[in-house]
Structures are given as structure tokens and as C-alpha cells.
Amino acid sequence: MSTVNTWTSTQHFWLIILGFFVAFLPRFIPLMLFTKREIPEWFNEWMKFVPVSLFTALVVKDVFIDSKSYQLMFTQVPEMLAAVIVIIIAYRTRSMALSVITGLIGVFLLSMVI
Amino acid sequence: MNKRRPNPKRVPDPNEPLWRSTLRVAMPLNLSYIPIGLACGILLHAAGFNTLLTGLVSLLIFSGGAQFLIATMLTINSPLLSIVLMLFFLELRYALLSSSLSPYLKGQSNRFLFIFAISLNDENYAINYLKFATDKKWTGKEALLVEHYSLLFWAMSNVIGSLIGSALKIDLGIVNFALTALFLYMIVMQIKNRLTVVICLISGVLAAVCMMITKSTLGLVISTIISSLIGFGLETTLRKRLPDSHWLWKLRGPGAKQSAVESSDGK
Image (tube, rainbow over the protein chains, first blue to last red):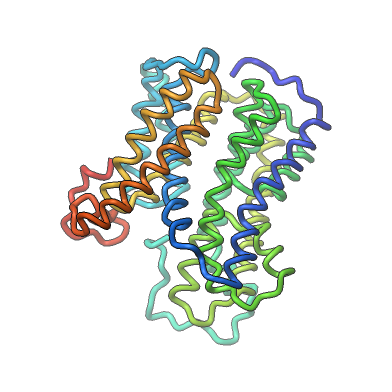
């Protein structure tokens, strides 16, 4: 995370505008359509697996993939251990804030020890 | 949210103004947004966003995952198109959330649906879905208020985080783990049966392979499409051929009063 980004505020602004559309349309279009007619079953059944697939992929990227070379790495031991802690906390408490905070404290303490 | 269910014996005061009764419902969520919003604001600041733009992105995109992702992808200098494409797939899950709320919002004007869609996100969806399903008096109006409270707390925490980020020097590697933890939490919340755990494993392996091949975050998009289709295919086949296969057994966390389901399967 050492490289400093060179984008200007104007570029950030356009990123936000484009981001707004890709964030807004998936929320709005189904709401528009399905308050007027029925939801097709297959669409729901398929969409059900999108979040879990994507989140897992993102976690794998954060923990096991080197952000520069895109090669597999097993060197982030504090993150790996903290991830296990987060899973346990999330499973037991179902609290988002508690999971995130324990994860942050966990990775902080573990990276001092390891 | 299950744990913070209000005491059932307490009768709600019929004279309580609407803004207060809905604020009471939204408060646990609002409070949990503060630490995450602060972390997000700090990271966005580190990625070069100024405080004004941090406020704007929180109001317009209003998604923890998406904003963390923007921050991370900017620090590794991803191109604009790649970030927007990644955001699109990340936000596609909202199609599912808004479809499932649509039965409760039949008959609302398009203008209402527009405003409702802008401030919808994972967490206020969870609250509103639960309220719509359990509380007959819960209407679109109350739901929209809950959304706006959470939006307000989220945007404020982000802006304050951005200011903290400009005042203090913070180890970003650690703050960045907030995103990983957030996604882990959302995975755990998504796990409904044993099949989902299998899909997680498939998706994890596929993601690593696809990213190593494409050498970019495009691998994430490809692996997400493939593994969600595998999940869809597997479940449809299982339902048809082996309707009582143990892979479809429900898994419930202790938060939801678990009976005797092995907890070791949750991982």
C-alpha cells in the first residue's frame, strides 16, 4: 500500500458518478419491475449465489493474492489467523461491528507478535 | 440483529412520534456504522479522496464494500474501467435485495421507488426486510426513514474518518483488514446450507486461479460468474434429483437459536 495514487479530484468525481450508476441501477431496476410483475424464479435462484461467490473471491484476493504480482502467497499469517477469528465471531454473534472491530484488533496484535 | 430484539413485553407507545420509533429501530445499525465508516473515511483519504468527495461518495454510492474497494483499487492504481466493472459486480447483489423487498412496496409511486433505491443497502435491507415480514404496520414510509438514518450516520462517519486520516498517521495495512473482515462477516451471514459452504470453497479456489491467469482483478469477475452458475446448477440438480440430500440441510448460527447442527460446518 505504499504507492501513492496520482488521480486528480476531477477523476475521482467521475469515478463517483460512474460508480453511482452501477450502484443505483441494480437497486432500482428490479424494484421498478417487480413491484409491477412477478420475479422470474431462475433469476432469483441464480442471484442467490452471486454475493457469496463474490465475497469469497474478494477475501481470497485480500489474504492470499499478492497485489502487485497476482501470485499466490501464504505469508500474511496475521491476516490468515485474524480471518479465522472474524469467522468465529461473526458466526457466534452475528454482529457486523463486533466482527470488524475484533478483526482489526486481532490483526494489529498478531502482526506485533508474528 | 436477532440478539437486539426489543423486550416483547414492552408495548410500543402509540403516541411516540414516527421519527423516534423508527430511530429506535435503526439505532443499533447506526452505531455499528460508526467504526466502519471511520475506517472507510481514513482509507479513502489515503487513496487521495478529499473530504468533500468522501462525503459525496458516501451519499451517492452508500455501500461499505464498494467504497473500501474503491480505496483499495485506487492505491494499487487500477484503471477506471476496471474499478467501475468491479463495482458493478459488487453492487449486482442489490438486484437480489431489491427484488425481495418489492412485494412489500407494491403500489408505491416511481418517485418513491427511486428515492428508496438510492438509499438501500445491505444492512438497512436486513432491518427493513425483517420489519416488513413481522410488523404489519411497517410501511414504505418507515422503511425509508430507517434508510435515511443509516445513510446520515454512514456519511458522517466517513467524513469524520477522512478528517482523522488527514490529521493522524495510520497503518493502512491494518485498517484495510476492515474490508476483509466486513466481507467475511457477509459471507457468514450468507451461509444457509452446506451447499453454500461448498460454493465458498469452489469460489475461493477459482478466484485464486483466475486472478493468477488474468493477472488482474478481472479474474474476480470471471470467477464470480462461474461459481455462482455452478451454485445455481448444483442446487437445481440437487433439488430435482435428491430433494432430501443432506447438502441442502439448513445451517443455523447460534445467533438464531441453534438446535444440534454441528458448528464445525460453518467454516
